[in-house]
Image 1 (cartoon, rainbow, N blue to C red):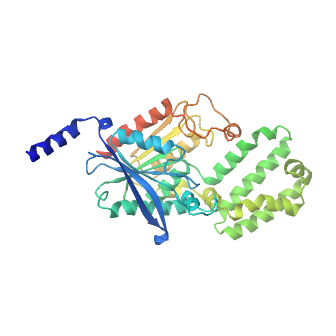
Image 2: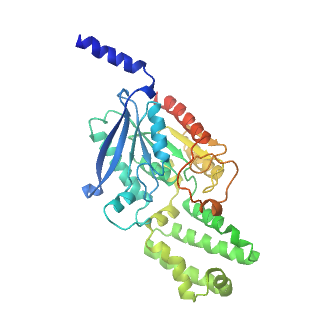
Image 3: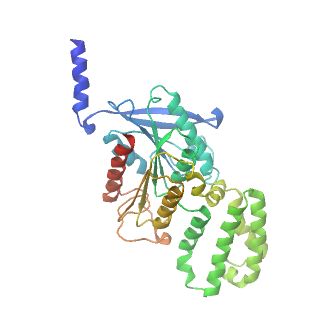
Length: 368
């Protein structure tokens, strides 16, 4: 009698829609830094998930973020669970640092540090008998996508790679683009030659950092270059940044780089170097009203890097009326406007639904 009841329960579970089945929330922790620190996370699993169904690991950018990632990963995880997919999301190292009483320092950890943590997260899944039989996919958003790319380039355990609004060109180009976008409102107050001198200073900062892999030497080169740029038009820089001596100006322009491992790694990052080593299926999604990056430039960057290496197993889409977080947004908001947005909660609507629909369709095809 017990056998028939158990068989009936299994049959009932297979017939129920995913929404009606129980989703288990399994709290876990795993070691990083060779056991010196542990990160906390949660595996969200449909109770009747097939043994060979993938576990999708969600990766945030390096700045302090818990597993929910301003609600975006919580919404994505819940939606994927309802579609029958198991997810794993965790509090990143920067956030976990603050829980241990350390002062928040957004620049302490780079994308490479975060990639090492992701590597340890994947190793944990493979070492735990509850999850070891499941193949693993990785979902990265924004700079989290760069982290996912780095890990997928060196770890064949990554069977699926999903990149959401991810850098597809060199970091030095993105640094220049984002800085110029923030300065746009102020350019109208200066002449063309003054604006171009400002552009040149931003360009040179990014190029020097990207060209010199040694941090201390890069800063020295940068200090020398900034001093020479200042000497070209001291009155312009004093009117733009406040009255400063040359030494004070050089310090103000170079000091932010000295203790910012994240920014240095960001500027030096070249996705092409890593994409050439990846062979797993890749899902690529961008938002057409993205204010942080030029979506078309980055989408083409990743596509061309893959095609150059004859990697044809990828799907690429750009979603209408969506911003960087895949919220509904009609029309483009410049970066200098959107960075001042006060509401930190996400408003996920049709754009997010479109992203999810395309993602789950691709997962069905790439998993089979």
